[in-house]
Image 1 (tube, rainbow, N blue to C red):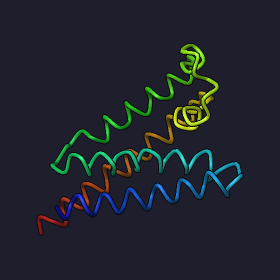
Image 2: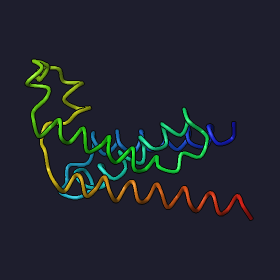
Image 3: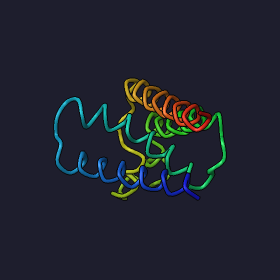
Length: 125
């Protein structure tokens, strides 16, 4: 139960940070890059609330999920489905493919994996 609460709080904090970035930051680094890094960490934390066990490959799965979203942007999936006019879906899926986003997702997933390793080693002591 403590694990779920920890990850739920972390997910809420990250969601708040993402909302602040989306609403108030209009630069060339934090919004496009740090926002993507934090987004995958947010997904990681949200999944850990649902799956509190030790999913060792979760960072890999989150990375693949993020890449699938990026691929959906590349093929313009929302437009193909006739849903390109729905603002909420545009925010969730995004609108522009960029290879740098995939690099940011890799950095975020690596950070999540390192944090998991740190927490695991700390518990073992």
